Length: 223
Image 1: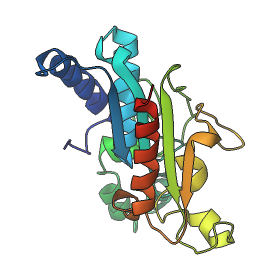
Image 2: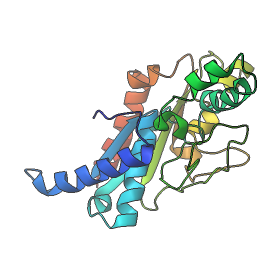
Image 3: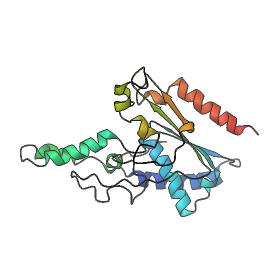
Image 4: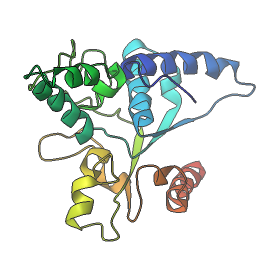
């Protein structure tokens, strides 16, 4: 499924929720279960859709059993926070202010990645560029839905300091797992997969990820 990554994640999530609400009764046979799979920002859109559905009484969410997020910055992405602070720093001097103005043109969707915001009220309401990056608001995952999460590190050794620091190159493992010392959105460590010697886009086509997903879904289908 394609969507405009420049829009707010909450807007895309609401549209996905509405689309699924129309799709279920239009499906040619009875729908018994729904599984959502999202890579990177797509995982945030999936969570946002489920949250929107639960809050607005959409019926499709009652059929949702599993959500897979692959390299999703549930707690935000360091690069997004870095650009936010860099914009504020460059705006201090007249000589570098044009660069700040250029960075300030980044989209609302990218700004949502500062904290992994999935609702319209979460994160920066005005998205003013400054040294204050706001306060994180954690939206817990829904009860009764299994949220599976995959992460990667670029190093061969998953405990290598470089791998821990950069993760898959864009998303760190703690963010992909939705848990660090300050935040916890309710993802269970046992529902996670961590692979090494892989980058952010490897997660889209890696046999280890596919085998992991397939086993879970097959086991869930058995009586």
